Length: 339
Image (cartoon, rainbow, N blue to C red):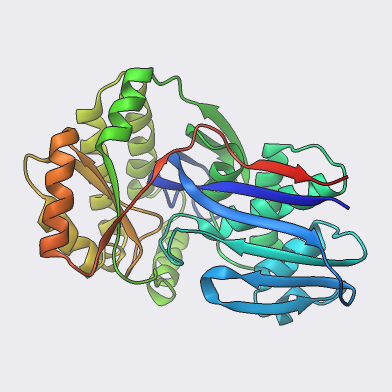
């Protein structure tokens, strides 16, 4: 029988985040997909009917049986994915893991969802369709589970690359891969660093406050307009190979997030920003929606400056650590073994 493995990248530097939401109604996001992502394997095993779910990062196992409501599963997102993906009959094991720390604000939940759906599609003989995967993964989080979610994480996981995602009307997105010169891609790879801030991201009450405020303000709120503009300016800068402007736009976007609510740029983020501030850093961006914990993307002035920044962060913010990431030129990928 077939054994299927799938990997979906995560995302960083999401310029224009918060505009890809139902309350913004329309939005623009420019982000970078990166590896490592989330890895899943589904394979046949001896045992009771259903799926033995194994989460490496949480050292947790539980059994899913067809027809089980997602909301009563220990991990509702995975329960919903197994139901949505029409898991074949029989006994299966689903293993999920990532070297990205849980709660790093890099879209790992969306990556897990996309990877599971892709693996199940291939297991059933269905061709991989990245836009469809992105839409289905988003619907699982929002319609099936009733959670707040923009659309960008699912698209980054499904399609990868350096992209401009335009949302004319929520939740319909149109992705444009940006034509980046090889020299610019090499420079980005040499200069980017992603800093995990020492603890998992926490949002809850702060994010609810922002959603309530923006819902009341409406889609024409000037802060949302400014965030949309950051995405377009950042995308143009990347296409033009202007990493100075790109770095400044990362910083500008972070300042705009703080205008949505000061706590969206948490104390850990501010400590790292203070540590890297100066000529060695071209800019920085709180990854994801922001809040306590999570991660921060920093664009160094050059490769030598990157090495100095890493040393400085280790000294000034020892609770943080730099993650080893590389740009993901492609989205979810699947490997099949057996016959």
